[in-house]
Image (tube, rainbow, N blue to C red; front, side, top):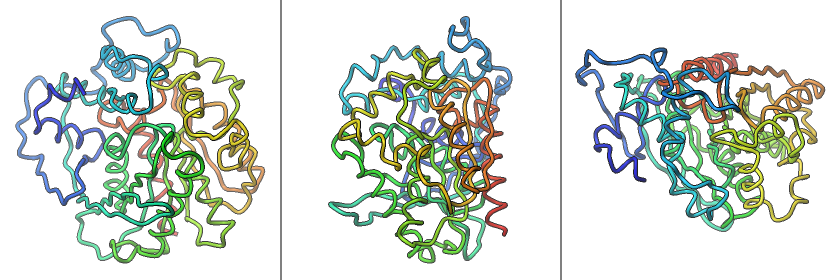
Length: 378
């Protein structure tokens, strides 16, 4: 990417650490970086100091200033609309993560220390293999609770690096082993490949938790956007297959319906980084036909949700998926599932991993971690 070419290797590594409130790493090999040796400068800024250079867009008048700065930076890359590109071309475009990294570099935002190691693991799945990135706390315990994490990107774009900050933040704050799943993507791999890969990763984790310092009795699921959809679908698949259920699931602005007429879809023609048009583009790439949109693994709001684990839902204000998240919360509660949901006003889709830049993201990560720790301690 153009942006990354202008950042030194050391700065790039440090910026990946900083996107979560407790640091990060974008390598699958064991990493130990002592950020305390990084010299602090007098012109270091805080997220609360960030102010956008121009007026906020009409669709996001109530965005927080730090969120608006990230969106402004993303817009400055002048990338073509993803909907005008092939999936392969879209994967090469600067992401919201790149925008947050650039904001951190430009404003000398400090990077907190990292306290997890990473390693990679390939596992077999039907028709091939997938990669897992495993984050392990360096706090010296013999076993930790486990989080299986599913990244976003509409089942089409993004990867483990794009969402490294979220996985790292969860590993550090929850003091848990995080297994981040690189499920196969569309259009090369259509529905239900990503869902089946995600279930296979969960099943592998249940059976092999002890080999990665994990406690097999304390496994939770977390997913963002398409990953939130996958996390809920994996819980349903585990229930239907008689597999051990996760003890909790955190769904961060999940894809939960195939309905373009909801209030938030109608409000989101121009929202960034996710618009109504881009969501339609994702569906076109992943689904074999519109009929797949009615499948309960896609349309969570029409699925049988009975017997699923306690659920935490995190939502953003400027997001075409906001309305279906509200519906999903209601339907979970009607199904007798212990559910709580928190809407973060002034934020956009993809804010969750920006804890070093967007204060609401730091709060959202803390909200998720509190729910996970409560489940782990039962």
